[in-house]
Amino acid sequence: QSVLTQPPSVSGAPGQRVTISCTGSSSNIGAGYDVHWYQQLPGTAPNLLIYNNINRPSGVPDRFSGSKSGTSASLAITGLQAEDEADYYCQSYDSSLSGSGVFGGGTKLTVL
Amino acid sequence: QVTLRESGPALVKPTQTLTLTCTFSGFSLTTSGMCVSWIRQPPGKALEWLARIDWDDDKYYSTSLKTRLTISKDTSKNQVVLTMANMDPVDTATYYCARSLGTTPYDFWGQGTLVTVSS
Image (cartoon, rainbow over all chains, first blue to last red; front, side, top):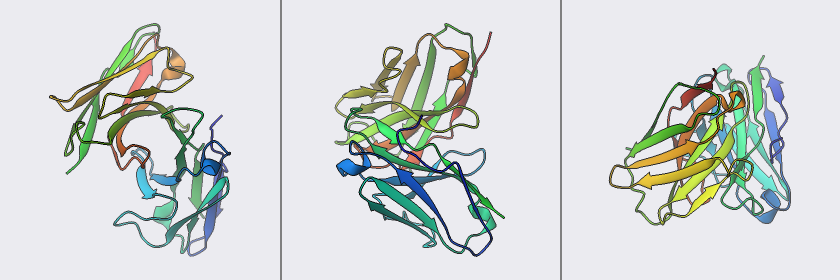
């Protein structure tokens, strides 16, 4: 069981908007720790997509956006493209697990 | 530029100890705040954080695995080593090392190394 909860799968047609939720608790997201999002294409290492809740690293399209509220965070992808089909993971830290980065269970995005 | 590369055996037997090495370049683990973590991913499953070592030699371990894990660094060689004792088939996974600055995100990852545990 992952410390952060994500839906196992989401899907959308090209051009549509999808969101992926990440639900934590008062010891991680709710404690004020930032949330980061990673995209993992098949057979590759995760790649940082959103950091500190809302920021995009250089090179990440502005179709990707993040938000955080309370004990949850969300990743939104607009204008879906076939190349967005991947696994997405949220990550934060947890005060009850000293030094531990905690991950969500991952969400498989399928572009229909 | 920043790179990390994992190395180690592709196959280990149950009960053996696994030793993995992360060799990095483009940054120094003597820089204040710098950290290297190990993260693993069983086939078809989620990412799981294992351990972290900081620039000042502070070490942190997964609470569920800490009795089996040891992390260390050799700053002269730009390497971080993870050992995991008493390997079991459920430990079959791709093992990644990744860089962060404290609780900041893992901004650079190695390509991962697949370790299979089987007799």
